[in-house]
Image 1: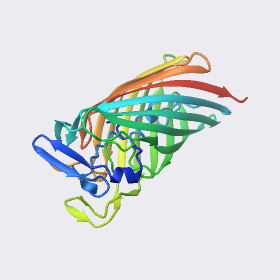
Image 2: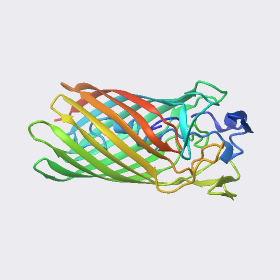
Image 3: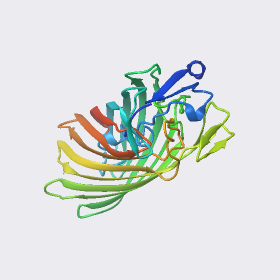
Image 4: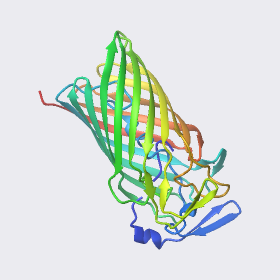
Length: 336
C-alpha cells in the first residue's frame, strides 16, 4: 500500500458495472455508483498521500531530502512505479483479499526539479496511473492522477546541519472516480502539505541522517451516491470528508558526488476517520495508517543517471500490505 493501488473508467460505464464481493462465507452484490459504502475500495497506500508518497518519495531533489539543484539547473526524471498487495488490514485484523486476488498499481511519472536559486527548488510531479487485479471481474482503471508541486527552501545551515521548509499542493487533473477502490487511481481530494526537514551530513564521509515531519490537509470529495455510512451513522449527502494526515520519516545513508544510497522508515497516519467494518468495504473516510521500510539508491556520474527505490509495508490499519519498487532515469540540464 504505500504508496500504491487505484482508475479511469467513465462514470457511465462504472454505473453499469455490477459486481459480487465474497469475503469467506459472506457475499455482497452492489453497484459502485449507487452504494458508496459498499463500493469496493481498497486504498492502496497512499496513492494519494503517500503517493504524495510512493513515486514522490523516490527521487533525489525531492520534498523528503536535503539535496538541491543549483540555480538555473533542471533535473528531469522519468519514473516507472509498481506496487501490489494481496493481504490487508480490516481495522486491526490482517486478512487475505479473496475476491480480487492480488491488486497491482503501476505508474509512469514525469518529475522536474527546478533550481530557482541555490537554496530554493520547485518540484513538480505528473503521474499516469493504471490498476489491475488477478481475480474477480473489476475492470482495471487508468488515467492521469493528481498534479503536484512543492517549494523547498534551505532555511538554515551550519557545519553540516541544515533546516528545510517544504510546502506542497496537489489537485486532481482528471475527473476519475475516487470511490471505486481498489481500482481508482486516486482519492480525488485537493491537498496542501507543510513539512519541516532536518538534515546532518558529515563533510568528509558523506554519511547523512535526515528526519522530517509533515501535516497534510485534504479537501472533501464528491461521490456518485445519494448517501453513505461512516462513523456509525448515515449521511444523506454525496460530499465526503477525507481525513487529514501526518507523515514522519527517518533516513540514513551516504551521499557522494556520483552516487547515493540510503535506508528509511516512514510512518503515515490519518488524524481521524473510522475503521472498515467486519466483512465490509473500505471507504474514503477510513482512518488509514502504514509503516514502511525500504531502500533508495541513485547513480549519476554525469548529467544522465538512474535511480531505484524499494519499499514494504510492515504494519498498517485499514489498508493493504503492499510491496513496491520504482525505477527512474534522470537528466540534468544546465542553463548557465
